[in-house]
Length: 283
Image (cartoon, rainbow, N blue to C red; front, side, top):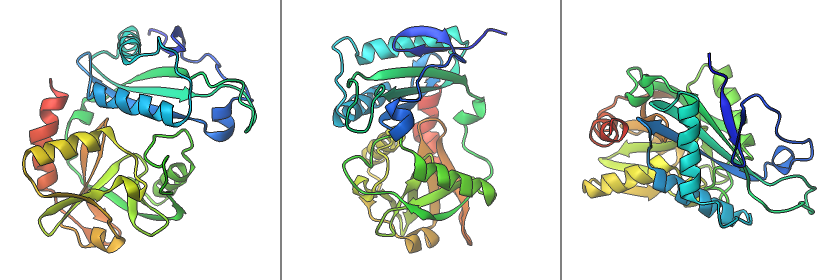
């Protein structure tokens, strides 16, 4: 079996090689961001959206990006790594960016260090789930609503605790709330409901991550002239919705069968998967 590789700041290394020191600011403070991408048949799905979000995040987090660090360079390295690891047909890719060593007030520099990793994906990730997800609302943490809420930050504590809670309670995922008790998103996905004939998803001002699949679906739904709102969603809206589905860049759409004691079927979620995601994941 071929030993798996990763890329660290442009260099190909063994995937099990230690890379950071105990003084690393990402390890200490979560100082950085990441992108999770999907490769299908040697192509990065929604690549332009991913790299646009990445470079916007680096700028907002005050990294000093060298001129050579471009989307074209990263795309070449991502695909090269996937090919090296025999993950070229269907893979999950993670790009992690982080500041180097230093204390809270005295970073050594603001260079964007990065690691690229790849993992093979099961073809099931291109399909709509047969059995609906079972989820519930996690109330022990709140997603803040600020200029950084929409980033995929390396500071992932609220999501990590929600994921542990979900696993302990035999759930597939958990909804997180913002400080105003409105729904933000889930541990790994954006959340959508269908209520009174309208598709609704939390607005970015509600603290949710600005998901790449969320962006793609919003545009596609509007192109189809379907009624759609980016808005506030309260827990009561979730419990009285006709449908719930979750989206992320890896699995696309997953429909929810149960949240708390409320039950749902899938109709629109299945239609959107067939009409929008099947062409994306089979191109």
